[in-house]
Image 1 (cartoon, one colour):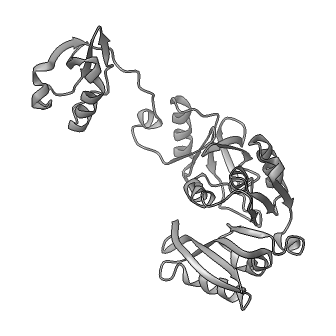
Image 2 (image 1 turned 135 degrees about the vertical axis):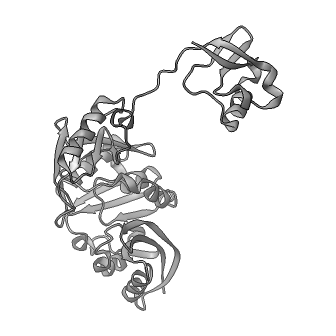
Image 3 (image 1 turned 45 degrees about the vertical axis):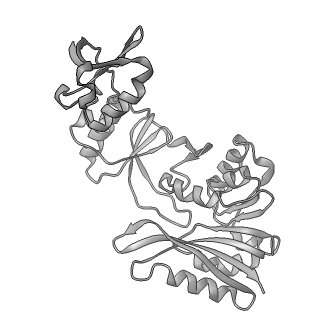
Length: 329
């Protein structure tokens, strides 16, 4: 098929391609071609090509670009989807629409083995949910995040890929040689990268299956020797690991305040605490700050180093994090 192309010397090709993209005339539906010392860059509108390139426009046959087909291409509308490893998650109350989306995902070029629809909210002490399997036959997957792999089963453990950036922001603060306690560790999305940074990590969780996955994930990422994985209530290990922590991760936002006395027991002389909370937009940080100061009492000076909104959780409610420094008095 004959299309307008800008023909320039190969050595100028990338610079010209960027200029055409900035001008909004780069034709993404056709392939760029090279012949000898000349590169041919397809454009959508020769009249809109920058004036100094106008003389370089030629008509030329160009192959159509083989574009991946997306679920949107199949459906004609953009569905709300979430990727977790090779699982695609939809969130639809209408079963017919959910199955239509699942069929489109499987017909598209999206790498996917299973499509799930949320069948319940997060439930119970272990924070898991029920799922409808719309396509495929499993709920176990391998999720990759900032160079680490996490094996997990979404039907047995809690895991949110949406928190990857938040987790990374905490992990980047860790230093080799410190002792970190992940009080609600799940399958290890904090614990494993912290260990990769050189920290010795004590990771605890009530969910025994999550701890099984945590051990597997520590091994598959090469940090099993720096992760102590414990199945049980973190309050039960407070005496054993008292005063040990240089860093505490408290990612249990609905009820982390109930564990602040334990956090203070675990904290060393100078301890960073990453405290997650869910509060109303009118005062998203105040309740957490007050609870931390009350728990610290006369034992620690409390410095609220940063306060940040992680995400919107519900109408007028935010999931927030307070990064706190506890310094023993």
